[in-house]
Structure formats: C-alpha cells, structure tokens
Image 1: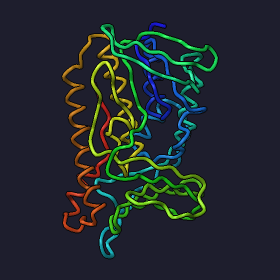
Image 2 (image 1 turned 30 degrees about the horizontal axis):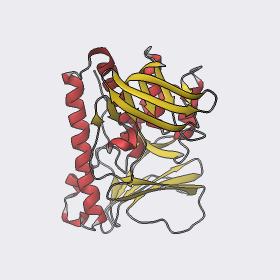
Image 3 (image 1 turned 90 degrees about the horizontal axis):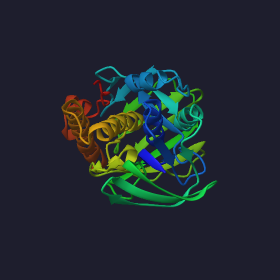
Image 4 (image 1 turned 45 degrees about the vertical axis):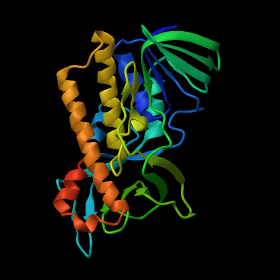
Length: 307
C-alpha cells in the first residue's frame, strides 16, 4: 500500500490531520489500536478562536461560549485578560463526525503496528481487523499517541453542575480551569490524583516536560509532541493538528518546511514553553511570586496558523 502520509493515533489531533490531508487530495491512512477514536478523552475546553476553527468544519459538538473569570490570590476575582471566552467540545463526537464524512482511509482496532525508516520515507506493517497483515510505504509517518514522560498529571473530570461561569483559578496550587456546559462542568486540574467522587467521566494525561516534534520522516503531533499544555488543552491540541497538516503538505510536496510555517512553529513552541514555566510554578505553589500580567501572558491561548 503506497501512501503519502500514514497517521498512527486515535485522538482528535490524529483525526484532524488525517481528515485535513484527505480533503486536500493526499493519500492518507489513519490507523489505531483502539475500538473507537478519542476513547480516553471525551471533553476538552476550547477558546473562541479554536471553537470557530472547529465550527467552520461544520462538526458540531461544541457548547455555548462563555466569558472566562479569573480567581487569583486573596479575594481578587475578575475577567481573564486579554478577554477570553471558552466552550467545551465533545472531542469524541467531533472526531467521529469527521471520520463519517470520508468513505475510506481509516483502520481501527489494528494490532502489531511497526515501521522502519527507509530511503523513500518509511516502510510499515500492521495486522488490520478486516484485511489481515498489510504492508506498505509512506513518505511521512505522523505519531500522536501519548508518552509516559513528563512533570505530572493533567486530570480531566466531568460531573453534574449548576455553575454559570467558567473560572480559571490561580488561588490554589496547582491551578485549575472549570467550564460549565449544558448542566455539567468539565475540570482541567494539574498535579495531583483526583479523589474518588461521582463523575460522568474521568481521564488522565501527562504534562510533558519538553517539546518533541520527532525527526523527519516521523512527525510527532498532538499530545505526543509535548505542545499541548493545560489549561487550554483543546486549543493546543487543535493547534498541533493544524501545524501537522501544513508540515505534512510541505514535506510531501517539497521535502522541506517553508519559512512562514517554521516561524509559526517557533511561536507556538515558545508560547507552550512559557505556559510550562507557569505550570511549574503553580505545581510548586510559587505563583504568588509572579505578577498577574506575567501569568496571563504565559497562559494566553495559542494562535492559529495563517499562511
């Protein structure tokens, strides 16, 4: 099987990259070991820019946007600045919606995936559910699966709620984000295990301690890239996928990355690392040593890529 791009992963970023490349006419295949996409993560927060990005795909699965409130040390409580509105996306529904729009090019529940780098890109093989063992070549492999390395846990919890406003809380260590949506609320917490409580769904991710985009012809994207940082996990995941699409296009067409895209990658990784600095201080209980303006600069949502 000859491919332009092989995408190996089951999260939203993998589906977005695969879908974006298929729409552009590339020979892309999405394979993963799970029985369904986004099996471990159901809900993620998205700020306005990335909610619009997903909304323009016509996928649905996004709650109403609400303005984010900020709770800092002491009794200070006000609006996040620069102003930000946030919603929650049902990322499993979004991913499944994107897949349903394409007739072929997805193999779930595969086993024994393996690959090696060759002169033409990669040689790969996997045992597919319907076809048995399949072998092929691709110019590029995109990996999005998570790695067990990092600074600590990102804990996602969704439960029943009567709250009305999203709150980014800097007054506790570590920081947290709560976003209400449709009678429930989704929390992004950092750094400690969730106590057993009644919850509709829970999942755990790892806060990566470094960014790793891989080495061509193997590209790391999504959570595997290390770009995705709380509290704006959905934004960074979508930004990573958007970058992945453009890197794949550049690589397949020219074997290189253009200057405009390279500059944007530097901007995203720099902002991600600044966010990591704030998270480090939050986990150490040292946010009070920083000015609020510096904290907010570090917690800005990532920008989208505009060629």
